[in-house]
Picture 1 (cartoon, rainbow, N blue to C red):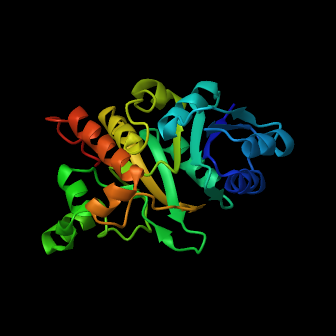
Picture 2: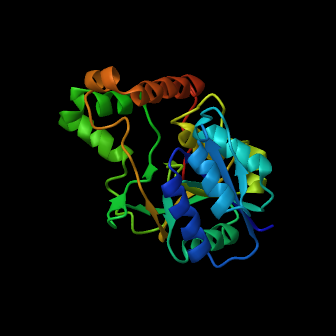
Length: 269
């Protein structure tokens, strides 16, 4: 099997339907398998998979496994030489998978490659970043982020100086759409289970760099992404008072900084 496509899903069968349909319609490869790993599975999702996509490997779960848990379940079931991880809110565009596959096949030192993400309105979505520091969290979630020194820091984190129209090594890529290869995953390991939600992708990409694999942003491949901002856009006090996702994000950040305390950042060039 050349390619395993693992779609992670959580309580949105209509978006999942669109995602799977877009893969069928826009990916021309034939030697691939589709795996859907679903968290806190509801009847509507089970019916969708049973009635409309019976040929797809479906992994339901009664509990919410989080992104990392779903990816681990999917990888354990997969058999492909290459592994494409997609969120269920992704829509594939024509040739996008082919471009990513061609790139990773022809660049043997690449461990992960990701596409340019677009909103359904065709607007660019940031998906490549520099590694977090504790100040990144502070500046993004407090009034300090309004000051010039903080904006400069955050612009660097978001890679604002980069025009995002050319292929580039990056520190880490958003986990919404990632292509990797089995031999690299076997060396690096699966996503760290201590990160149930948030920082799984950051940590994974960092471990790829530590194992001498490049992480690459490739905007020649473009993919649609419906992105909800569940824990962003508010002050830290308002967010923490009203949004449990913010608590999870900060808890994951603390685990991440503890894990890498005293360790130098890997170089991406």
